[in-house]
Amino acid sequence: MRDLSADAKLMSLNTATLGPKRSLEDAVEGCLRHGIGGISPWRDKIAEAGLPQAVKMIRRAGLTVTGVCRGGMFPAADADGRRLALEDNRKAIDEAAALESRCLVLVVGGLAPGSKDLGDARRQVEDGIAASLDYARSVGVSLAIEPLHPMYAADRACVNTLGQALDICDRLGTGIGVAVDVYHVWWDPELAPQIARAGRDGRLFAYHLCDWMVPTTDLLLDRGMMGDGAIDLPAIRRDMEAAGYDGFCEVEIFSAGRWWPKSIDEILGTMVARGKSCI
Ligand code: ZN
Figure 1 (tube, rainbow, N blue to C red):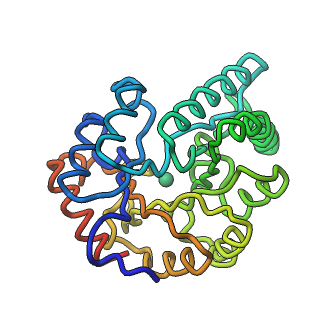
Figure 2 (figure 1 turned 90 degrees about the vertical axis):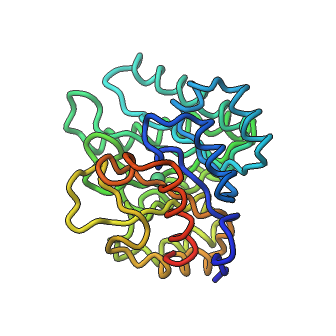
């Protein structure tokens, strides 16, 4: 396993970690101050800055873009909705291409509005990815399906395990892989063999870190800092690297109560210290 204790060059800051009020510029400058080598911007932060400015800012800082968050959200109630989703995904692919991102993260979407048909939602997801993939390939953007914890199946993502995501990848071919987010997959008894499978097929595109708090007080906004929760993070990284993953460790912490109220330097200082000691 790689020794990450010396510096934070292989760490990446997912902009969600700083909370909704901080700008892309705040995030970029924070990475520079703390020696963090990568960044993964959410699209609202790219939009606030403006894409050309975002590209310039990140390039000038010498940061690697480890992902753009996010595309996906494919299931819709009707053909118009599905068309709009595809258009938005094409835009997201363009943004990822402009930023030379290692991938576009796909949070694939849950049930279509008004529907209880999970099978239909899953079909719409696969159709939507299939319809986006040629364009992504043509501009050199890798699509990374992020399986989400099953508690989000209704509203955010009906792809809930690594195995399920990899089955979709197998059916769709090249240019598609997975973003492994520990928060979503740590509980899965199939985690280790599925990470190995993803590695064999060259489909490990991103690795997202935080921790699972006990108890978790909010399904979305109570993620923990690495080391504060129940996840055996070094064990998962060992599996990732044994499977060939040599990319960044991207920290993505949605934490409205605990971390977002803190100063940027406290958040990033803690993130870097934990990155050196707890992952
Ligand atoms: Zn994630």
